[in-house]
Amino acid sequence: MKQLIPAVLLLLTFTPRIFAAPNVEQMVKDIEPQVIKWRHHLHQNPELSNREFETAKYIAKHLKSLGLEVQTGVAITGVVAILDSGKPGPVIALRADMDGLPVLEQGNLPWKSLQRGELEGNDVPVMHACGHDTHVAMLMGAAEILVNIKSQLRGKVKFIFQPAEEGAPRGEKGGAQLMVEEGVLQNPNVDVIFGLHISAEIDVGKLRYKEGGAMAAVDPFKIVIKGKQAHGAYPWLSVDPITTAAQIIMSLQTIVSREIKLIDEAAVVTIGSIHGGNRSNIIPNEVELVGTIRTLTKAAREHMYEALPRKVKGIADSMRAEVEVTLPLDYYYPITYNDPALTEKMVPTLIRSAGRDNVIYSKPVTGAEDFSFFQEKVPGLYLWVGGKPLDVPADQAPAHHTPEFYVDDSGMKTGVKLLTDLTLDYMKLH
Image (cartoon, rainbow, N blue to C red; front, side):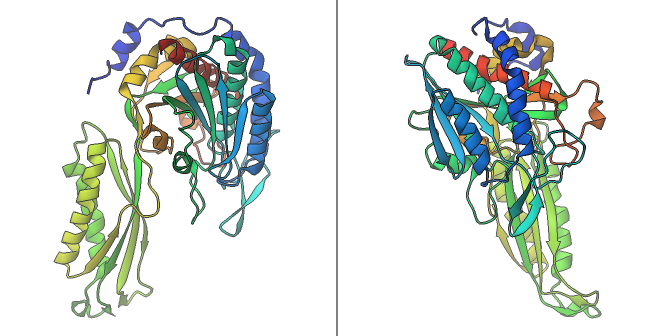
């Protein structure tokens, strides 16, 4: 595969081509107060995954007011709208996720969330602790701008407001995977998809990108080790699943350190849960381990699928224990893979949208995104947009998925302009 030009050379080599309408920047400035108003409403009224009913109504009302063809109830609560220019051209999808998290918001924002929700039978607080409120507001703003310059478009734009990016409740399906299964990339068939995520760690006005594996695949797994119970004073009468589990846990790390080519891409194996035994003097019959694998290349992912059961079985056999491996466990996310050719093609747009000094080539991250399900079907580009206030040091910025999470309203105008420019430039190029 063609190698993308290294980041520094890339930014020095490409001269941005002026494709977008000359009034887009002004339109972004004009709509910014409304985008902020939308964001504050959404932030005050977050809803959990697959329960975004009021959020969907709010979005659909705006899209219908723009005269768009709107479909609701996609993948339970998703909203999809189509802007048809009436002229031949590509079909471009723009995606925003819209679910909140079971997190109790701290701080004293005037638009702080006080909402509660139900999660697996429990009453929980709900907060937009990952910035999905800004994603929705930015795409609503881009939709309005694109409608207003419809005469300059060619082809169609499909606006996808996706539920359950954070994961469907236990026992339910949802998110991008369900949207794809229900045909969201068809009728009309999508040629390319763009998405973005606001970041509490990146300065307002800046954006980051990476070609290839940008975010990791997620593959949860479960290992059940079955031994023979005995008194803790007589371990020779047992087949000890706890000792076996300890050896398995340590050995799994050698897959990453000794079998994965780490100079290319990172990989992670984490055991997050251990259950077994109930007394200090009883060696139990069984131990259960639950963990996650994170990989950034197809080759590394395939290797982990082969190596983990091999390691586990080999150790269990050596300890006379029986073992069951379930991989993946109950869900999985593919690699968030930015198509290299598409990324290279759109870098000039990134530079023009944010300014040459504000476009940063990023290292991959081992977090995950279900935007990857769209990218399995069509070329896609997923980007990070800055939301950290400039006066907040990077090491003091509150992390995503925490009660203190915060991104500044001023970061959204970069996202609105970026979504608009990506659409216009891709249409011009095709």
